[in-house]
Image (tube, rainbow, N blue to C red; front, side):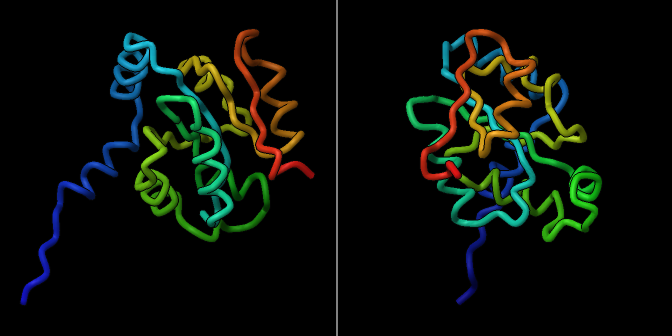
Length: 152
């Protein structure tokens, strides 16, 4: 018996990898619908169960979650090492999560421009260093959220 593959599922996941005017249109739509938008960023390399739990916790009480994903080049710059997983694979896996609405590849350490573009009501951070970086440029009314289970 031949296995049935539904190409629309993969296409749906790939459509979550947004950029340019497509991303801007989705952001406008979410704001028009008064969706509570969350934002987080990082390498997610490798994407593991702890990362997935963090993302699901981050989107609680929100409608939408945008994930900024460090590019392979950015990971090399930050760590001096090759990424474990290629950015395309990490993006595809993140896009496959029900809690993630958009994945945007980042080529900057602190995604100030992307945060200003998304205009989230909550930014989920994994540690104090990330919280301090975001706090230096976020809008006043934006909540910085860090899960207790991630606290050191």
